[in-house]
Image 1 (spheres, rainbow, N blue to C red):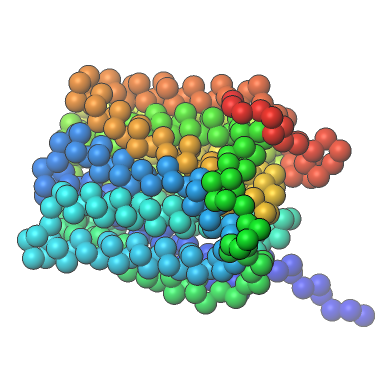
Image 2: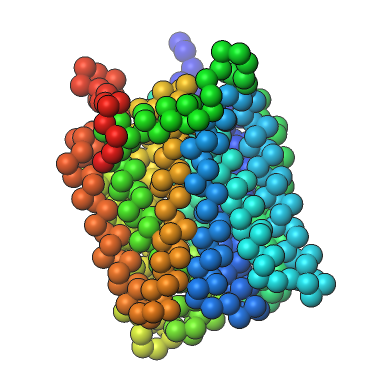
Length: 433
């Protein structure tokens, strides 16, 4: 008589994925701390204006405009892991300069601008390399589970990270909080460096190699020609433009207009991020019930709409704080429903040979619009005021769903559907949404 059946191995039992998961989690926690500490450093210590804060945010995302070319270059590299480690080490070293400079009373807004720009460039390198590395670690059948796990750790970081960041800023100052993020990148580099993967053979150049610009164009052409990628890109770009009008002004609005202390603001953002954890856990179950495509549509609406709650925030301190935290909760829930399912769908429809090129092209447009959104938020915040700008962000962001409705995405129920005779194919002659 045979013994009891062994329980199936989960992804976290796989050594490679577990190492990546832990490295990713540590880095995400550090990011959440600096995302609060960085603008608070500019606002509270350097007395930055709305326009200056918007420039700081814009510089972080400006390097994404080069992603279309960087993605083509990454596709030609054999050792993707080395690129991830290098990106983490660069970001950790750059962030380390901030607490050192402020320790000697030498920190300036100009330095923050430089650090923001260069860390943003290193992040583009990491993000364009990540998808190609991801498929080396995870089987296709486990894409949804892997994205759910990684998004879950990211959501946890949004819960504890802002609260820890707010406490560090309030008790030990913002530069010390930046030091924590620098250490997290170094820890991430160490964790990723320990992973053993079998890399595909890279095409690093030679007489028969196509020009870099041609490879970049191939990635852009495939992205704009594929009905799923084209519609999702238009949706995400619209959402990013308007939500970054909000992201740019959130800390400034909460600290100056709503007069919420740094520690309490961190707690509100952290508590609100519980919605992200709920969304990451619920995304696979919801997609199994209603389909991947419909989950993406719901997430596209639920993500930007709660900005309106922040726009109307007023009254006693507890109510202002609850409205900010509640908006974050609903928004985080929406972005997880959107991201987990969309990342899974994208991983299924992008060919291996084009992954970094397509991600680079996608990021150039999707993330490249974020600096424009940030600068628009700063300009409108100065011209119209902060509350009217938040209303514009809420309404405009919600309109992003209009790109999805006529596309094939709402009808996609599962990845198995894509493997059948009705598999969605790209139309490479199409050049725009």
